[in-house]
Length: 112
Length: 112
Image (cartoon, rainbow over all chains, first blue to last red; front, side, top):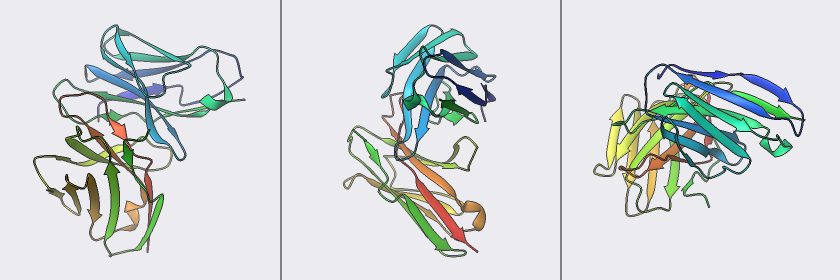
């Protein structure tokens, strides 16, 4: 358990509006990740961060941006939400030496 | 292109019997493998892992087997309990890397 808090936990938004999901961790882990979970696709990596201001794209990064200005916070932004971005979003963290990632409880996003 | 595959979307077993969940991977560079368990409306939780230097790792009722030549791993749960009913994800990574690749998940139902 890496003390991960995601907010908001549930959100309904309209197509075309910007949305930001926040991930906050208390374990000082270096690595942070954003995944989305969809039926038939499992968990797919959107973006990840390997340090403050250091981020990289994952498998499904189109339409998403991220920022990490502090070790403890990793933000995921949908600049202009689309219905295909309706999903459950999970944040995860990992320390520098470990081989295990730990997940937050998820953020349910519905784009109507 | 899914590098980690779980070809059985669902599995039902009787309480007390063995549950066997399977996972295949295509990337020969993967050398560390993990299983996660996910209950509805919760984040995935780490269950068990195995390094490619081993072919078996055991933790209580849970055992993971790795067949590197076949690029196949399996999770055995013995005996299965109703509380084991959940979605199970396998994941893989390169030992020196920091990206985790997940399968599509298998929904296990243990029937009392």
